[in-house]
Image (cartoon, rainbow, N blue to C red):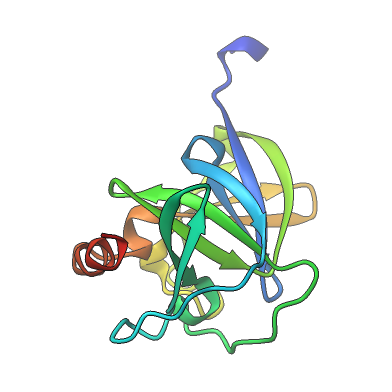
Length: 156
């Protein structure tokens, strides 16, 4: 196989607690600093509220709470990554957005049964890059169809 035949995947690397996660760059709309979020009553605890991002009302999800990882206060490094999940624009609160990388798809392995405290269903695979272990998130599994339906009601 030549170098050009290698399948490369461009990803955004972000951090939650001590783990590094990735999502494909084509699913990312923008990376924003944390800003005041308007609470919406009656939503699930991991839905922090909504933001008006350039005229688009965007529901904001706290990935720590979604993955049932202890919450912490926001810091200077905290970011909101906007993505499209099942046709819905959503902002994901992460501890930090670290990097943009090209991953060789041959370095990606299927997920093990359990990784840390994140349920394996959210994980598409694991990539080894030098000394780093990167977890590829399956965004379609981060929110259920029911979650997307409820968020669409918030979104309107």
